[in-house]
Image (cartoon, rainbow, N blue to C red; front, side, top):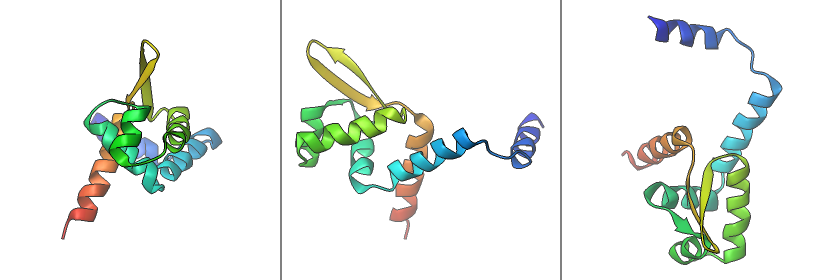
Length: 108
């Protein structure tokens, strides 16, 4: 019952400007093929910038730019090991949306 009330409450609330902005930016992130490829890769394992660039056949500068965008939205996170940063996905909700969308696209 509590879940139904929460869903009902959500339907009756207007979204504030900050929430609207974050949601639109998240969909913007998922609207770019390069960012989708990076998120999909990071869903499977953590990688350094060079590792992502190599795995996806992209330039390091391209990967760095896209990771900065994704990090600002808290879609990816990193850990430092020496001088190397290792990136992984940070938002299970977005990864689930991405996975469901990929499954939908592959469904025949």
